[in-house]
Length: 233
Image (cartoon, rainbow, N blue to C red; front, side, top):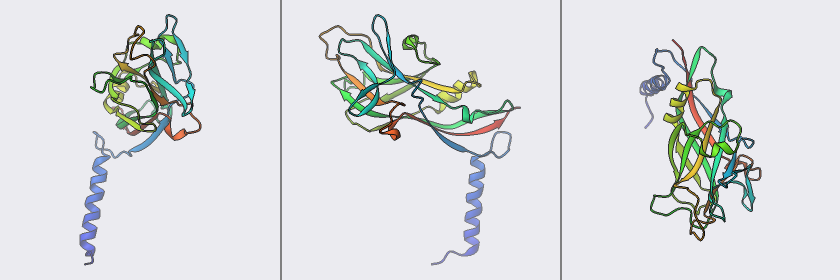
């Protein structure tokens, strides 16, 4: 049966009103919602080994590609990874503020070695928002700006995508730091203290692709942001 023209027009009108309502700001003006995907900055990515003199690495290169390591090295020293996103392209001028409707962080597994996870959900990879600028050894234990939550509870699935919703975290960050143009994060096991040998955690590693990865560029860390702007009062 063919759709009657009047019914079709009414349906289109209702759909258009729904779209406009979804894009209406608090002051009643209509704003456009946009979506951008940012890839982590290889130059600011890296991982740090918690040795007596902490060592910063840009990445670890293995058969899967350039990776960031989270877990414990062969001598039982813990390792934390760092990823950074430059969002300056969407930062507004002084008369507007950025409102994030949705922000999803995605990382992709490149390897799991030995047994870094416990399978019971008590030793997991957590994400923290930090502000380290250019990566150096002091970033290892910076006080987090926010606990973003758990991003991985299990591994052993190379190329798997691990998403984490950061909408609330980033909006809260922008309220305090409205002019900062980098969103930076630390990934670490909870808990992740150094361990004495012998230990089942020795060489227990969860690895994700780095922003430096070139052979598989689609698997670099990504931050997808749906956003709009609001005029300042």
